[in-house]
Length: 152
Image 1 (cartoon, one colour):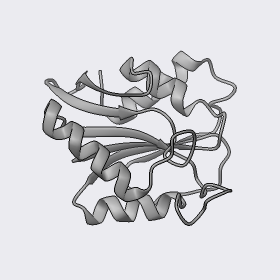
Image 2 (image 1 turned 90 degrees about the vertical axis):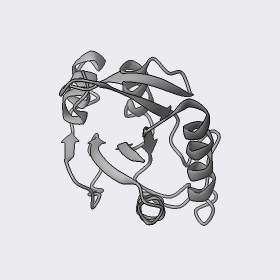
Image 3 (image 1 turned 135 degrees about the vertical axis):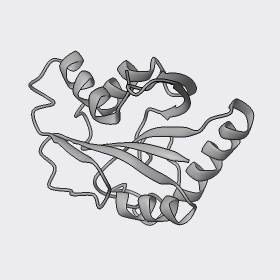
Image 4 (image 1 turned 30 degrees about the horizontal axis):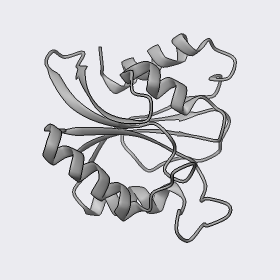
């Protein structure tokens, strides 16, 4: 499974950007055009994995696999906080625990964006930092993410 990750603190527009890129409100499979040509079916999970309707690393993996089987999904885009859930940190850990779990399951991380002023630095390929995401108009930030992800 190819994966695209959006990392950021609460209220830094992670969900808004992913909604803008995919047209997905919460969780759904979408066709995405690639900048290199062709298309892929992407599963988008808009809310951060540690908030609202949280998912443990294994629950998220199962959620994506179920969708991949039924909708021919080949990639996933998701949002994550740069820290654990403050109320249940063991159940919903920090991003490194999620990323390590998913990498061990064979996921290939294609690109990552880190939004806002968070000091978190993921050990992933192709990481782009967008510190001005709260100042830039949402369409400008979304376009930067789209280009970085290699989507059209």
